[in-house]
Image (cartoon, rainbow, N blue to C red; front, side, top):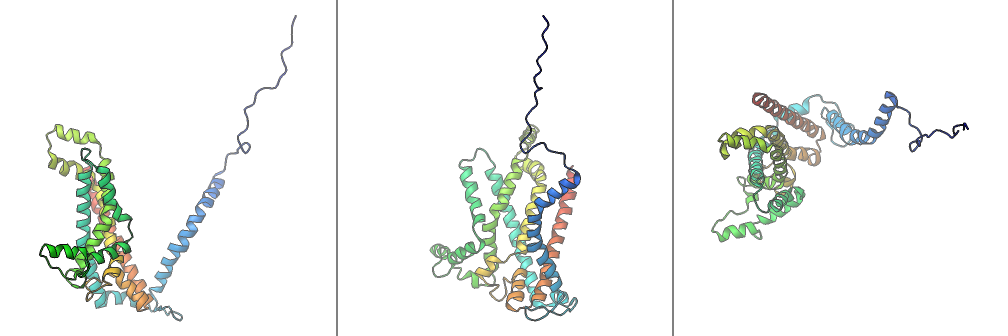
Length: 315
């Protein structure tokens, strides 16, 4: 006896949550991306781009914060390159950069090489301890160091006197004040550079070192011919960051010396602060800010070109 096949419905998979999706057009995807980016772009424009454009406009005026500023052309920029106080600030900033950059970078690299050794005990503790100063506020670090070197109650002076060394008030000595503020900056920032170097070292494949050992390369040869060349990009990054930090030195100088004694620690950023907030010469301060920005960009460009050529030569 012939039976008819069942007449049930065919199985359909359940629809995705929210219903079936239609493929977005390129314009629709662009609108969605713009909607997600809009909050960040608004904040960036309101608090970064607009202030920079406003400062650029003020640099061509005699703005003082009172009354309507008048356009004076390049007079502020001419003053930047002719003012003797600015020349002193440029000299001090260059000295600060020359002292800070090699010490901070070399100490960070040396400690990264040491703590990258897997056989070293308590590596985690030492890595954390070296990075902790970077987390501390620059102002707090400056206050702490000011008390440490205080000639009356400072522990550093107390210990040195016990060893028969008299250094006096280093923050009032025109020859020692700059090395002291540089020391505070190195103590505060080298932990950040140390972590970057450590990451760069761990990114080097161990097989390269094994091949170098098989070829008879010693520790110094491996450092000179393997480690340092492969760290060239990391070195460029750290050097650029360190030099930019040196050009922007302000916090610990403001807290510890205020630019003194006798202007021996007056840097460019301190001069910008003095011109803008104490002398109320906002136009001149804005012009000096853009000169410093141009110098920073030029320095970064030179370093990028130099390390880019070295990388091509190594390739």
